[in-house]
Length: 124
Image (cartoon, rainbow, N blue to C red; front, side, top):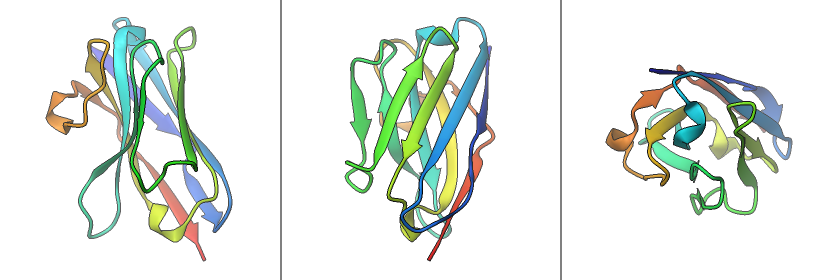
């Protein structure tokens, strides 16, 4: 079992920044690929970003490229999502997910563990 706890969400103005953290505990969380999925009100869930187990491969949705950066510190069992130049359309609940194996996936059902989510609200 792996437990995931997100933090760092909040209310921020347009153009501001936030850094989300996902702290993992339990069975060797550093061996998992990780992803950040977001769900905005009235919209489908989407992968905002994902990272391989080693951190060598990353994915970003087109809507966040150049503004968001995903990273991980395996020594701390933590994954981060640095979000800059935030826009109102970034308002969403952000969920951290862990997938057994080295490669990330863009299919939610292929992730094995999920956090409870953290809310990000960008005000204009």
